[in-house]
Length: 272
Image 1 (cartoon, helix red, strand yellow):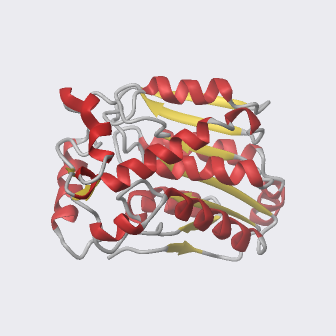
Image 2: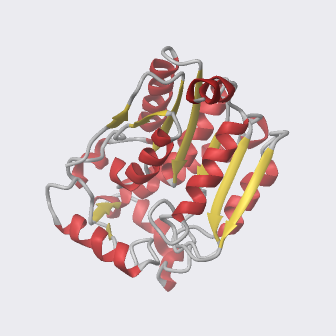
């Protein structure tokens, strides 16, 4: 089972990566290694309620994720000159919570999930709010289904094998409680988007099967960052750190971070 990932080599700058709802640090492991190769120390923590069993999520409210992420940022930032943040899905919302309250150098929001309205949702998705009403919320569960947020068929098969391994920590299904908390979190985030002034990169796929790209555009338009960039993908689904355009995602993020890194010149001098 993959829990926290920490790649450290005494660098002066660090990146914290946050995984998505029901995911694990595995979905960001390749991204972490890429950033580490560019002389960033990298931290990928496992979020509360994850990496154990699906029922653990039933005890979690969205504030638990928020406090956890902010505490993680405070702890890590004490040891570095610069700290950057990035996250996918739920992890992108956590970045917004941190950048609202702390002086983050720059952030990259990947497939930010402000709504669950992608093309792979069933036609009866409008009935989803009913699942949040007791007692239904205790009985309704959502089962992950094909294409699992991944367009690349080879990667999809690999992820499916991992999901079928009960010790992997990846959840095949989860209750409506987790979905409710994600949507509550999203609702809260929307209230303060105009307060976000951190340099921000937003990357979202036009083919996202979970969250329509219009939500990411709304986020991008509402934040007050003077320096912000929107990248639209065309050959990926929701899990853009694993899918066809992952290399583009990695480079866009690293270029954006390096742009705001005062340590970059020092690193170049040391390398030379």
